Length: 284
Length: 292
Image 1 (cartoon, rainbow over the protein chains, first blue to last red):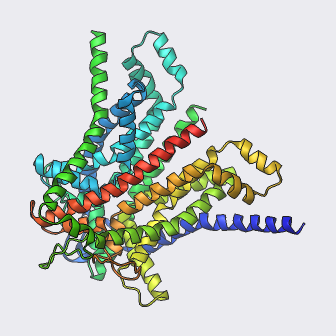
Image 2: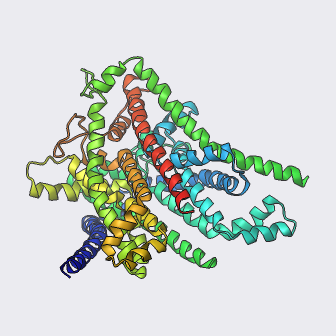
Image 3: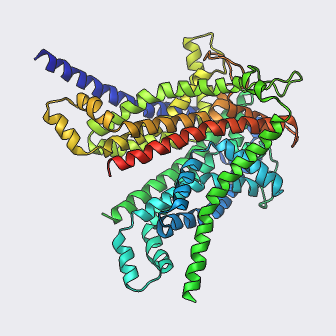
């Protein structure tokens, strides 16, 4: 009897420990967001968004960094989306089980684990130097596109995998070719899933700092980029720059810019989760 | 005509997937070419045995151990924090928590991994370090403890999510058998479920280690930029990744020795994460066969 009671007590104790651990992460996140809000929310106004960077903290704004982030995000999408989806279609629908498919699979799983700063070194040597793009928006976008490529491929494959085999069989039975099946049946059916993966990948890209620092993106740019070959800064680099300055005013600026960055990241994640839920219901 | 079109499309799709292989080859080539250039000027023995890393000073030393110790120290602290917490969460969510609670809490926890790392760096420097200083006044304002803990918070969802998936994949029959023998949830969790899902759990921990080793912005902001061969968590250190960022922020001439050092540091980092990723892939493949 005594043993049974002891075991029950241990069982209960672990349950509360488990709840405590689960809440720990969330409580820390809440403390953290609360802290940032206190530091930065008063600093956010229209001027903060449309002002150029300045040596005086109270006159600085995030305009150039925000525009840089938008440019990079758009170009990264344009580069990574077609390649990533095409690669995923090949791997999931065309590929036969052979040596090449194993190599591709191992390789993609490895690429997903390569630290982002290494992609920066690749971009620095290949895009900035060899292809002579300089530290431009285009070089940064290519670098980030390679970085998110494995994420886009993996999530697109998952989405295609979730389409029931009956859809393919029906399409082939109607005399459709392989590509017609992919284009008219599978892509529309897996659209929600692909979209979810792509948005999550882009929300990762928008927060990336290290690879862009390595390819030479600047902390101080006087003008927003007007072409893909212009120099640029992005929001995370602007934040990093402000964090490393000792004067107090810049801490407020950093906190305010973090609020904007978090807002963008969380909204993107929210949209992704929304599409995932909506799409998952479809196949149930 | 239709056949030709199909063929062209298939080839185009194939080429897209081959781009991923080109990326890997590109990374290996770029890193090794610059690293070979580097080792033609610096002895590889010094690189692995010297304990000082001062390429930016006049008295130059190139001992990667000074950077490696910083990387391992911060990663160790992060893992020591994240593994117990992450595993407890995964066991709680898969064995104890009601289904509805799990459904709401999982995406929330995954938000922790979605926060940009530069933001975590700010958190470490502005919140965690002052907090630690209020308990241990002698701690330096840049230190590996604070950076490590915050990195641990960031990787909690990597461990909890993947481990929970692994626990979830264990067939219900094992669970039912354990309860049939009269075991409590706790006994079932630790004596049946965790051993059965052990490979999946190990994979999640390896991936978390690999993530911690490659993490850049948190350590660049909060751990300092002073390479030193130490395992003291209260003093400033520098990791491999933070060094690469530090050099990139400065004005370094292409082709100079300083420029090559970031590639020598980069290839060291790449080899470490490559080994860890390959290991986890192997284990995962084995695990998949087990329950299929």
